[in-house]
Amino acid sequence: MASTPADPDTDDPGMQRVLSVMSRLEADDFERFDPPADLWGRISVLVAPARADGLVVEYWIDADDVVFWSGEDWVDFARDNDAPELVDLAPGRTLWSHFDGEEVRELWRALVARVRSQLTAATVPLRCDAPDIRRWFEMTITPGDDGTVRFRSALLYEEPRPAVALLDVQIERDSTAPEISVCSWCGKAHDASRWVGIEELVRGQRLLEETVVPSISQGICPSCRELMSAELLVPTARRDGQR
Amino acid sequence: MKVLERLAMVDRTVSLREDADESLEGRFRSGDESAMEAVYRQHGSLVYSLCRRTLGPERAEDTTQEVFFAAWKSRERYDPESGALAGWLVGIARFKIIDLYRVEQRNPLAPEAAQAVDVGVESAGVEEMAQRMVIAEALGSLSERSRRLVEHAFFDDLTHGQIAERYGMPLGTVKSDIRRGLQRLRNHLEGFDRAARF
Image (cartoon, rainbow over all chains, first blue to last red):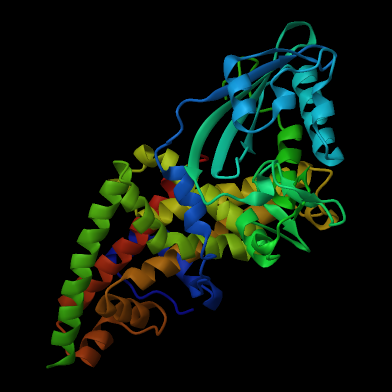
């Protein structure tokens, strides 16, 4: 780039810096890529005023990982989501027995182990959708006394959508079809080599035309695995859960 | 109509646009959601382009989302008087990208290539690229006339007198236009400097 002609303003350090950066400009610095078309949709959900009604789902596990207390909203939430097995928890059953995906289970176990060993709280995003509602939660995992751990999930935002049969537990499952893995953190579904929104997967696999649908399993997409792995390694909060 | 008159008309249009930008920045700061969308439409490609150049297309998407969410949560800390919003957003993006590099280096589950990265060097590279892109963006936001004059002065190595002669403009006008243009560029870098790890 060319040298700078003399000018009184260029004695100003701020202006000198501008000129210095200008002198290093490259053609690529002017190139712009358009963000994916759906990106604003994802951001708008986060910036919209929460339409959530303050729902907080809370439960505690003891040192043996058995759920020993759950808040009132737990029962209502389990019932609303057609999860009768969670309304009355079997005595002695560990939290981990409710997970069907091994990788997801192990990540949660590792996170809880970190919370216990470091006596630091961890906060992670979480999706818990109903067939006709998208829900974004934030879960805070806080260490208690004697190895107990509190899980507190606050609903940040929810929005209605056309019902997705794939998420409806009442719909018949095709036991011969491969399971579809759904990310527990962001709600995306694994479609061949990509992770896509569940509605996109339903459209792509033409599941709307099917009377039976594949089973789904809890999974984790690469982006969320990265975030969770980071959360596992970085102490984030004090014991009271405040960041 | 003479070239100068046409350029003056363009300048008036740009001046109106700059007023609109200031109004937008104020509405963004006060929590107007529609302003947030306008901010994204205006600066989304800048933030996404920086993320994409430093992180690749897949991670650029999530990081851009994080940048705008962080900006929204911290909007009251943005002061339109202290710097341009475009610079402020890129400043936030720069921290998100550098933090991601650091996390990856600490993360044993990250790909080997990521672990091999020298974070100090990479961070400096991100910082440098981000500042260049802020200036490139600011240049693009100048009026046609200002941009031409600044480009002639700094890239074509013309003196102010030569520029004045080429366009038949008074020397004082050339100087003040270039000065105003450079101040706008500095305003973008000041916005960049005001950003924090939100």
